Image (cartoon, rainbow over all chains, first blue to last red; front, side):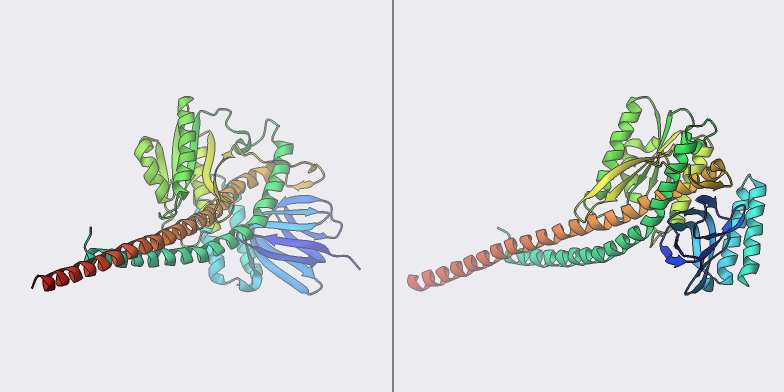
Length: 130
Length: 288
């Protein structure tokens, strides 16, 4: 049986979770990764997506946008610019995020990055089931 | 000697003032608690952020390819000072202390022949700085409508500042705010945020970076700036309420003292008037 690791999820405004988890699925900028006990120390940036933490009490999912995750011997800390528990996510919130991204894309010089962010958001919306 | 009527009116008016200052003190006490909670809730994020940035900055910062936000533009000719103050007055020396610190810095920079630009956040600081440095003010961010400071407020300030930096309008960015130490002590603080200075940070060579260290740093630096603004906003919020609480406590006590003083004078002059009338009556009776 695999051990557990400390999982912290913080946004600038509050700490959303600080629990023991058996595995944490992170939407990394270069692709998803799953952190379990003994994972190599890693720092990765996040893309907009769904972060899942599996713990003995059950799975919890959060919608995150931007930020980074740090995996080390003590556990995983995810610093997300925005993080919302999946069951509190409403279509209105997702629309808001997409509207923000569209606005950001219209002024951004880096069209590729903006397009990628949009694609990530749309993928996230379908994954969130709205 | 003021008449009894004026004294009575004066006492009544001071009593009303005391009621108001007392109420303001209690409101700030409640707001202070909320502000402190918000500041505490934001602390883990800022701490982790600074730790990771410190590590990244230590390993990438020295290389030639380091982002400009970290390494600077190579000159320090144009300084942008972001002075963060409150939107409302009646909070003791809170705004003046921040402005005084900024003023010292502005004068020092001007004496060195640097160009100074001032961006104000909060109405009170703008009013004070406009008197002496009206031509240096380049912008103002209005927080009047903001009921509860959120990360989005910090982001919009950061966007404004970063846009100016990217456009080459400034080389060094320093923020001025008040750090909350306790209800009676708020320390005006200046902090340089561009080029970023991160303390400590070692032993990060152990990490694997995805994508690369440079890419992560480039992504995180703007967020770091926003985080610092957010911390400053929250500290400022707590300081403002703490400062107002102390100021209003003093005002309430002062009003109390004045009421005692004027009541004594009132009673004494009332007594004197009665005595005088009695003497007049007795003297009148004796004259008959």
